[in-house]
Amino acid sequence: MIASARIVKPNTDPPSSEFAGLKRLIEEQVPQGARRDDALQRIATLDPKNLDEETDKAVSAAWAKLEKSSPSVDQYENILANVLQAIGCDAQGAPYVIRALLDRTFGRFVSGSPHSGRLAASFLDETQCQGARGLSEDEKAQLRQIIRDRASPAPPSPPAAPPNQ
Image (cartoon, rainbow, N blue to C red; front, side, top):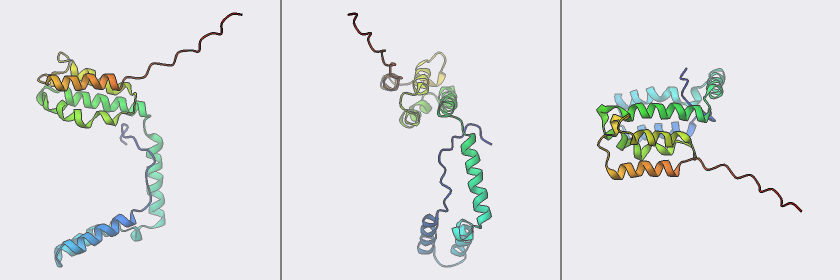
């Protein structure tokens, strides 16, 4: 079992419309003959009509078990940040990997997540993150903006004490 996978509300309904669309696409796009027959035979296992009730229950139970064993959001994001940091900070990818991660990565964290700011800060530390060497000033500014934008909001101040009368 993958301890770092996060499963939330899995859809265990048979994808009947998706199967029908795939089958229709093959029938319309693949010329008649052995290749079309082979393709249709290969996707036949995906046909919801071929699922028996016992298999369907087993699949649903397996997904439910995975959902229950999923890490919390914080645990998942911590694992994700650590993996992305290791990938981004590898010297062999400098600075191209971090550059690619800038556009795709930080939206994966929930709003106010401390992990996105920590990851951005690690990408700014060239002494500890060799993959950051060669980032442009614009990219560094983008990382600093991520730190500012995604910082956890300050906790609310306690209500003021009523004046003495």
